Image (cartoon, rainbow, N blue to C red; front, side, top):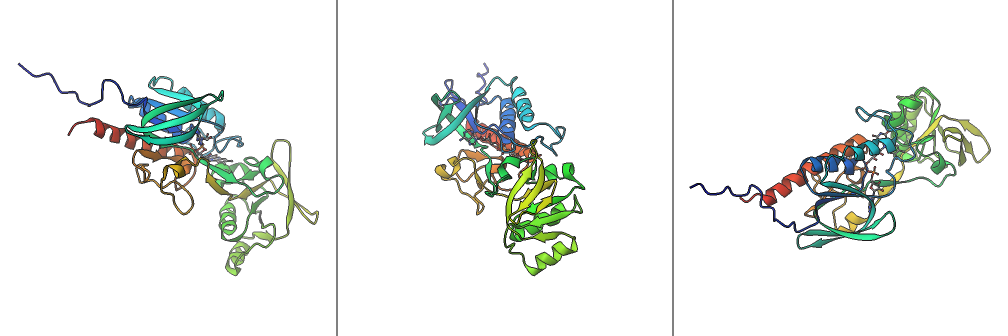
Length: 321
Ligand SMILES: Cc1cc2nc3c(=O)[nH]c(=O)nc-3n(C[C@H](O)[C@H](O)[C@H](O)COP(=O)(O)OP(=O)(O)OC[C@H]3O[C@@H](n4cnc5c(N)ncnc54)[C@H](O)[C@@H]3O)c2cc1C
């Protein structure tokens, strides 16, 4: 008589945690990871609060098959396509704390109505993104994403062959200005005070016919739809420009990784290995919060990578050797 087949996966009849994976952040990285994990029949909770990083931008560009889609529409589609995967739940919630437990992690969150809840999980994926620190120049924040741009790969094509400026000082502004000169022959570097440019930087900029203006700036003047019209210097002079590019400093949108003790890089990003595993067992990270290029498509790909690593790790834990 043949013996009954041993179970392929040693999953307890009564799961020890509410979820297999909790994903913190419902941007490109988080939703893309949720899709992959849903397809693996994993019990997933996605907690996302507030807007994604590019909320002020009119469109997401250079996203294969979705070029020009509105940021909110991209995420709406992402959520809509999770619907068939009934083991995936998406909640509008802000995760306030995560702690280790015997079977994984316990999470505390605040829902959109302000009601708190807790949940337990075997693994955590942090897809919490970064926040940009804009210079305190009047107009910067108001025009951010439309007249003030951060990335020529995302928005250079839309302002090609128009008068452009690059704001900043030192090495960063030089590199960005040289890059932008691919999209326009009329680029001015505005350093808003001493530019701290080396002679070599000035020579390279001159060679590309990029002018340097070191006068202090009073404010940026735009129109109602957020397009830049002028950079206004403190001496009252106006420089007509269609857009200004900056490379703002940034910080982690969430301090959860830091509180959990995850290793961070010198730039403050959450360190991960090639599979998206952080330095803390059971905790993974993906998207802008991790090192490397910051683009929606790359964040989505990193979400998929981390999700595959998580599923394979869970499978190894479930399959007896
Ligand atoms: C102005 C602008 C325009 C851009 N344009 C483009 C473009 O055209 N093309 C392109 O490819 N890329 C563009 N980007 C870059 C793109 O926005 C990012 O690469 C992408 O959003 C990263 O996705 P993410 O999921 O890692 O992070 P995010 O999209 O920032 O999502 C992270 C989410 O996590 C949430 N969160 C954080 N902490 C918590 C917590 N504790 N609990 C619950 N939720 C939390 C945040 O509120 C946020 O919604 C642009 C960026 C900016 C600033």
